[in-house]
Image 1 (cartoon, rainbow, N blue to C red):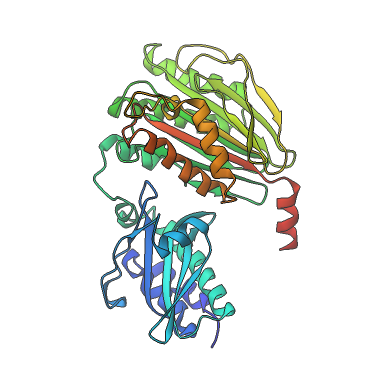
Image 2 (cartoon, rainbow, N blue to C red):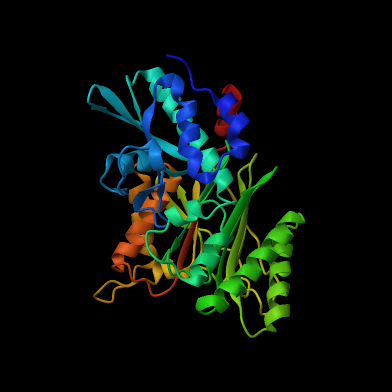
Length: 397
């Protein structure tokens, strides 16, 4: 049994349509005698895995898989492959990874699931992720398969504005979540990893509906412009504030938080303009709120009043969130609050799951407390710094 043939697939990929991804992957897996391939993408809330339509390459229709209880869901949650013996063959489930982001699951039937074959299937899942990510900008198919139900216009606009739900490198990781995923309007986040820094922002436009989304879109665009111009955080605040003020003349505002982590040293800098104080988690415990002199919300003609600084230790995580996260209420009127958020995050972090999975489960806690009916949009961004250990691991690899 040979190894998958990626060279032949790369020669064909430019001429493959989005509906033919499975055909291409079966060609790659031919040396493994692979058959009955299936591709699933997680919906926008991360609760259901929905199959991509594969046409004639699969003998029967694939059904949705629940993230919380199915074998496919376990692979998605843990990022680890699973094998099930079936009819004298092996059904191998592996995560579909779009670079650093787990967005789904790939399943493949092979004659025998040796360690080498399973390792090749894992690589096939990563290759499938690269294909899905490359197609995402040229087809609606991936977006539609991630919709579990109808989505409002503001929510659709907001999701098109967002980065991947996880970005990572050897030294650091950023991941984010929005709720309610199908009705969001006004909340947004953004992050990138550039040469020296992990940059991040969380923004919340005043009001609701399309107007709020348009306001936040302007703020995100201004933030990206300042970031790409190499502006420090205080000047980034000034640039975004000027853009919103100039357009809305001080009659509307956007709350926000900007942060950046120096990849080499782990020094975190942040500016807060109307959001709750971020939380710092170390060794599975929240050790402090990260406070700095608060600035006015963006769009009111203010100046940056303070830039906070904190030296992170390897493994530290920082949670940035909007007030909608802590203002959710239970059926008896109790507010979720910061203390419940701290308790839930510490409990989830103790599981040793990856930070993006910890964040996904934390969002479940927030929404479950309010029976899925949040009073306001809720956004969370988690930043994690690995330190020199991440660089050493990359060099060793």
